[in-house]
Image (cartoon, rainbow, N blue to C red; front, top):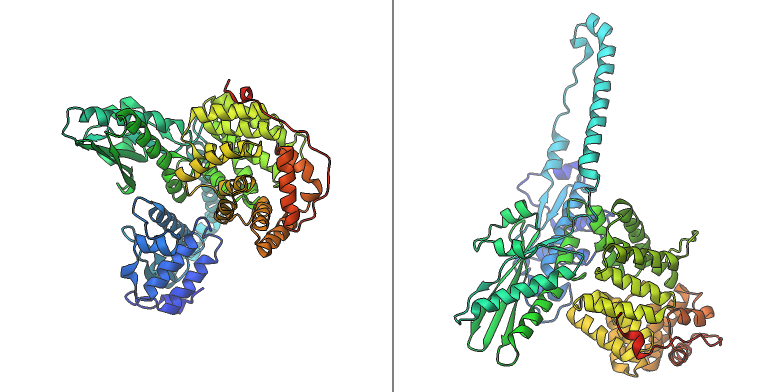
Length: 600
């Protein structure tokens, strides 16, 4: 991009404003700078602030407000800025190692703050200015000896080099590229330290010990992470050495905290630390009144809230690992991270990438239950969303059901496996069985918001709109940063329950422009609210993206187990939004009795 003359400037001279802005645009336009999250907006904001002379005002609070749309109530309990900063630093590091290695200007964001640093790429400059190494001429060697032995010597060297490279390649492939024996790749690993007792009462020790036990019960239910057991937790000394935890246990995270009591007041402080550098990636205080609730309820509630915040699919650990994929096997575990990113936007392009990634993961790790579950949902989306349909010998719905059953055979308590089985049964028109599996899954892990939201969606679509809405509300409250898909379903539930204000509010929060059905739901809601311009615009977008849906609307709604009365309401809404909805035959209704919803 820049010329050699630029790089030859004195190292003490900083790049000027024009060079910095040119480099910023060059980075943002590069295919090596990923568009995951809001890294581009983050980088542009801090660079422009620094250029304007406001580097000292670049704080986590201002970034949260200006870049991430948080309101003035933002506190450091919300880890979004720290997580996105880690992702941005890693993206810049990768960019300068690959596409930007010869760029003249560097933009870095050192740890410890968010203000960028601008410099010339002195390594590139020195490389360009360094004289080329001198080549030894064959004539410097005895001419007669070289003419006789030189060609043979060259051949010998090349042969030895080839053998060395082959042996090195074999060694690398067997030691680093080949997955180690086991049913799953490395997952983020957590150690729970016994919570410190800071109280004065005689029962203070029991409070802290009981909370630690509750955490060790709640956290292992999340199969996307690995949690060390009680014996390891109890053996940890008070003066923890984080580097020792990482080296000896291989744990990337440490959950620690304290319990303080004074009279009827009880405060729990929880902190999640990165064992690599000791950085606190998340912390929070929980205040409770011992007089208003019993101790066991308090301990269970706090443990649930901590576990849900840090360990769930869209939680703190997943977000940190999304910014810093694990080095042991970045491919297999990264598939699970990409799966949740795909679920947030539901686009055909991401669907194809995640499907390829997960198929490779289960080929290398056939015992990886979570990957089989995710692959089942991806196969399901080929049919219900018409994403990248593979017209092979086995239909997508059958592949989805087979993969879900494989996941639950490998691990009967895997929440994601049970979720996938529930969804596959639902779209295979086995509604009572699907609902029973959903109930069982919710019992297995009542804190998993991905499951909670999906089960709420299935209940709603099957006709139980109010209960589905209640579960969706819980999932959104526990995980406001989760998939927009659940906001969209909550909006649809509100429409079906004749709650227009909630429907309009929730559809605005969904904002899933790449997902066709989002536009259909938005059109119905806006039409019902009298917002006809928006309704027509969304309806046109939907028809453009899914021209096959309306001519086959009866089959589409029947596949989703929509009950006849609900189907009629939806079709009226589509017509009101200006879409041509043909009349069709009545779909066969599947109704549920109370006994159908009892877990087996």
